[in-house]
Image (cartoon, rainbow, N blue to C red; front, side, top):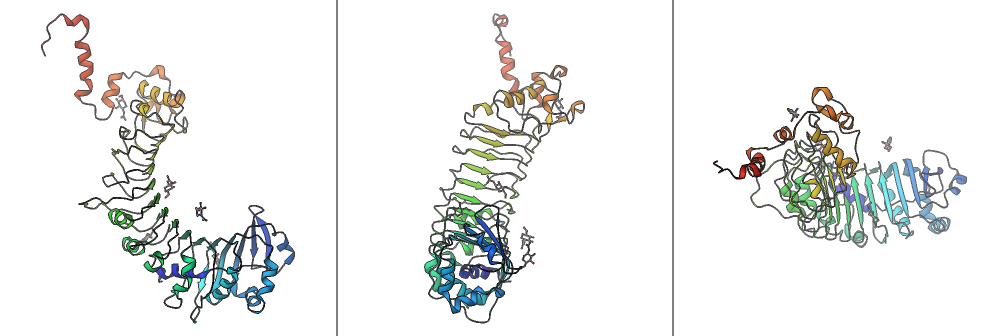
Length: 457
Ligand SMILES: *[C@@H]1O[C@H](CO)[C@@H](O)[C@H](O)[C@H]1NC(C)=O
Ligand SMILES: *[C@@H]1O[C@H](CO)[C@@H](O)[C@H](O)[C@H]1NC(C)=O
Ligand SMILES: *[C@@H]1O[C@H](CO)[C@@H](O)[C@H](O)[C@H]1NC(C)=O
Ligand SMILES: *[C@@H]1O[C@H](CO)[C@@H](O)[C@H](O)[C@H]1NC(C)=O
Ligand SMILES: *[C@@H]1O[C@H](CO)[C@@H](O)[C@H](O)[C@H]1NC(C)=O
């Protein structure tokens, strides 16, 4: 399937307005009216829907939908009937849409300026033999969504230039789970007002991204979602998106980035504030990150060590990794939210964390807590109770050792029975070396009682 062309096709589609046939009822709220094409006409039910602003047409084949032949013969009548309806959004679900209906449908759509949002869910667009005539429509739709749609390749059956003035004003576009591999450059560069683009769950590979984000593509883009595609090169994605200087939000989660040799690291757009690298296969973060991000999601990777320095970072998500100890937070002074749950932490030392003045939420349940030491438990209890930092306390904090307390909830371990000393704690802590004990040794040496004695080291 020429999935590339699917996008072109959808963009050109415009819309059909369902009315006057099928059973209609209000769903979800008073604002949302659903009409089923599979049932018999019932004009009465349509009256229930007069106050709705969202209309959904669900199930069947649009070919059977008489309204389109009425448009040909009597467009004024249709306009008269629908003149009082305050519809803003149209949704088409589970439909077969013959391409031949498009020109009529678009003509129809153009006469309803208050409709600004169109959505197609699980629709199949069926190819027609003729050239599609798309001349002379003035659509006002600013948000267009396609989810799980299928279409035949458009090839040269449509002249894009006739839709240019509409495409140039489109602000929101999503094409999700539709097996799309790229967007033709001639479309990307026309989408000059686009701010929000969701391409999640498609088949974009690195080359597809390079083609779609060609020079001059999407100059106003602010939010880009590419999760669940087939991207593999972090560098290529960075270089390809580097020119998007309005981009604030980038979601690359659920792609499988492979390690690569990087000679000159790429620079991400400095405007980026939210960056999602969840489920991307990272073992450590040795690549360039955007400098001014405020929210970074690194959850569900294989990260074992981490040393970040991002002064403005407010939220850091590290759930579902392999961290054996808390990563250094020295370079993250603005941190407000930190998640460390589902890792391999055996303790949660407070020092360091308490220097984070703005920290108000720390999720650290589902780790491998070692409950041998009173100190370990007291520190976690302190974070939970006096600092009120742990939203997942106490049920998610389970001891994994020693055997006696395995599967105990941390706050149910009888503290009085624990023997472990501070020194044992330090030995157990990560990276404890002789240096750790040096202050202890020195403080012994400087006790007044020893001072009078000459010290020979
Ligand atoms: C998608 O639409 C087709 C009809 O075009 C329908 O048979 C099918 O059940 C729909 N799938 C879902 C998941 O609703
Ligand atoms: C575009 O989509 C986003 C997210 O769904 C929404 O918040 C925003 O209001 C939309 N903008 C327009 C112009 O429809
Ligand atoms: C793309 O990803 C999907 C699921 O994420 C996978 O099933 C498919 O095999 C991948 N295709 C290629 C060409 O890598
Ligand atoms: C990142 O993406 C994952 C899914 O891919 C989602 O569950 C998560 O909420 C996102 N993180 C943020 C901070 O938006
Ligand atoms: C738990 O801590 C104790 C005391 O420091 C130590 O002896 C023991 O080896 C630790 N257990 C595990 C599984 O790390």
